[in-house]
Image 1 (tube, rainbow, N blue to C red):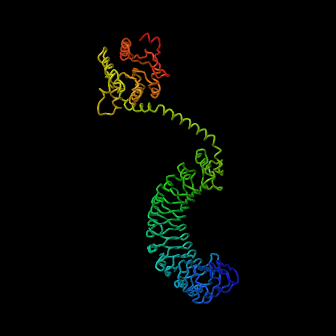
Image 2 (image 1 turned 60 degrees about the horizontal axis):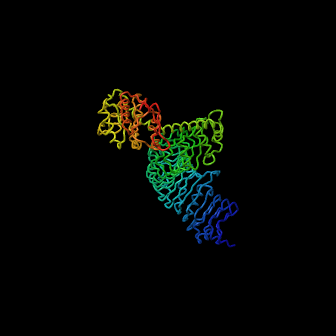
Length: 635
């Protein structure tokens, strides 16, 4: 029978008694002979394997009752993997057969016993000395019992070994790991999980070339008390879960610059070190801090973990999860905060989860389902079909009448109240916003004037403060000033080009020198005035001061016809002209004599109400000539 292309052959659990391999299995990759009756391996059983040099072959001989391997049987044999679990009935049989396998080249060697094996083999380290005569890259020894706590006395000398698995051997290792570092110079991966106890000393620093280290479910001594990992800058994987570790120094993980996976579940962290204990772990992708008894996490705890993708904080006692704690985790996609003690999540936290995460577990927390938490409950309802892992564990704890109710079903209870409150809030906000938009300038002017309103005893040295456009200054100088300051009675005017103090802000001059020191305000309205922002500002300031003082008289002089469309942009002036009387500058000898007489009377008595307010024409933009007949007779 020729099977030159056969890759895998499984003849496990038969009654085969020989390991003889036929030559036609030249392409075989996996040969499973477990649980047969092979007791002896002769030197010529593997001749065909030796001649074909199948270096990729995985040979599984587990659960065969091996009693005798003829020395030289495995000499010059190259294998990818050799399984010998449950093959040796005693430590002596194991010792003699391992020595007989001298000369074997194997990438991965697995020896030991299965966990449910009835017989336990007490083994001293010298029993595995035969391994020193093999060329091994990966060694797994499980289900053994190294008796008399003497493992530390006998170094393992396998210089080419890269992977060493000593898990589940009830090991007690003192002064770890002198016996490993001296004899295995190329070791990259070390698994000491599920043993009894390992004591780490300074000699452990010699394992600086390790890439993965697993101590899980093995009691550790000195971890978290000394910077034991400070030289392990190549370590990528570190499992310290269930090791009874107590981290009390900030430098517990110093030096782990390449670490990508850290598991520290069922450990204890002093709260005062959390803010900086992970500062060197800038390459970390996975962090498991479940069941660590955490009550509070400082904001700075994860500040250096920019590349973290998965975070497990489950089974702690966290009362809240601040968004500021999670914000530095830009690459985070998976978060587990199940079985903690927070009643809800803040809006900052839910926003982070919605924007960044693809999976989050919030189950088994004592959620508060009162209407006070409606923003959170609505968020849960919106996210339930997308990212949250609900199962049946996302339930209300309070109030009592909702206890046990799914969070996703609570949103209907408070919807009416929420929508009414939200609607009222929107309406109030809109009204407030509209009022602010319409009156923001007036509010600004009032606030500014209130700062100077405390001093009520400012002397009124001017009869009127003249507010005009600089383009109308010629009219002020040629007509207004001579008539009022040189006429009878004589009036003292405040003019910005003459009376303002140089070197101080314009607004200060307007308020302190103009408005506050004048009994009246003369407003010279023209097209230039309407188009000037400074004129608009001065007019609004005068209006605001009149509101505060309740006595500042305003006299408006309409110097020329103005455009109605432009006037509407000056909301305050437009309203004032529609509701108050004003004087109009017109041509004609008689009209001007009447104009000056009425202006002097207004300045002297402040009784401008005797004039009727002409209305502005909305159709052509000119000032309407219609006036009250009574006022025509008076003028």
